Image 1: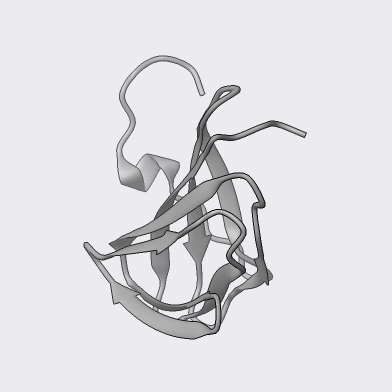
Image 2: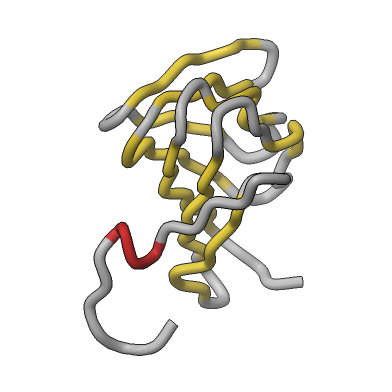
Length: 108
């Protein structure tokens, strides 16, 4: 992304067939992005062995998996995923925008 100020509405992108991922910032130590999901869309469970991750629900509501637990979060709520813990978005309950951060990050 270039310099300047953008609104959430300008950054969001929704795809009918799958979750949209928008990278907002990436360095050798940090990745910040948006996950935009239509109702029913998901992100498969996965893990980052050496990185912590958070999901902050900017708008909407979704179910998340963290380890063996299922957690429901809505606008303004935060889901934390420690390094090495399997996590994912089980399903969006409504149109949902999630701010995601992963640190430390190493680009592939």
